[in-house]
Image: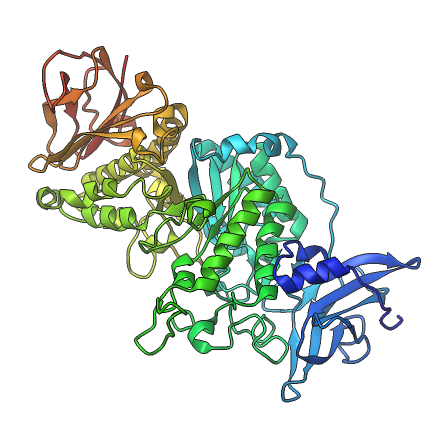
Length: 635
């Protein structure tokens, strides 16, 4: 095997874009790329290490010896080291040995742009390419309609390692197995999208994937990159979108990772007040550095481009927005205007969303943002951050707090439910019951419900019915769809055996039917982000703990009437005001006996009377079952 041949994928234009922070396809240039130079097959390597005095590629092809294959530094002060190594090909394992000008420090680093990584706990990169033939052309052509803000958007959040395990073999399912079993299950459950907790390579299982080291490589825990593409492809072929969790907020200090990459703070901010996260004991990206900004935006584009992802859920946005996040007084420095906002991070997020939507107008970016920072999901041209949606953390917190109360006390806390409507249309909100709500002693969702067994499951059915008929899109973490009792444990499979019991089967069936109700009724999605899509009938019946509202789409005649009873006392002959005459037809009841309910029901058709009620000219008497929600149409 020969030495390093001078060779480059970079043009002068590429370098100018990279230095300016405007190169959003860096994965086409950096990393390892199998190619042919002067008729010789081999691999081109390129890495950014501006503080290095030398960079060698070490690997299984040179006995991991430094200096055998030393890369050439570019002459343009870009800090890029590159070169072609003959004979190196697919499957070869490598790292970069970086000798720094800074105190003669030496580091051994995995390739930040590697397309495949070794299976943890091994940490090297793997030369890789694939010629996967996508078969999702039909989905890609029509997905703009599926991902639109006025389309049904019901998300099943999944941790691939613990969704289902081969218990007898003590292992998780592979990408290939998931492409059959997970796809079939999500299709059966009628979810429109799957969201995967981070699948980019990560070294530490208890981080759940949120401490990344291989930003461009799907984790090798479950198979090869092309097998992950198969999973995406199969989802698309079954009309299911896929959202990937993406973590541009922080990264771990692992020796082979991005930290202290070339002996200096290259990817992380050098000021610990901006570069170190005290909660997660991790490093924070330097959003002020152009090359880092290009790295991150290129990474987001990579998953949309190379893996056909339909969206990115951006993790920990609040931690990026604020300089004082999780910091006491004196531990942070105000911005140039004296404020607490991280101006560089805000500019980065705007630039990210502009580029994503320019390149892929048919996807969604979703912010996990837990504060009242304004205009997160508003366009950048009007001063917003430019995300497509934002998690509605306030709704999640208030609603779960309300449901945890014994029904006899709920009359004093009805505002916990109704408060969400005072701000529901300030953002494009997604209602999340995510993995964060079923860990660290918070208990499972069913575990928070009060009462005996019947009441706990009735409460859960009511919660889900309220969630699916509330304005906004929905997200439900795996296991919650059948009433998993235990908190989520990333080391264990979900408790699938619970589905032998009727109450758990009833929860699974009601989630399926709620997804169908949501998808089949435009009133629940066409105006889901607009105050035109919602109207109160009654929100102040505290004594009975009842609320009623109208959900509206583009056509008034397709509106739905929703009534919820948050006590175990049936509300019979309960009169509600209505917008017009006709017949009231029950479409759905969370108390249906097939879900494990009591089967109490309104007559299937009721004639609406011309009688004033709730400040309306028309009204009707309905039955709202105990701890139940009912949905009607007006025919």
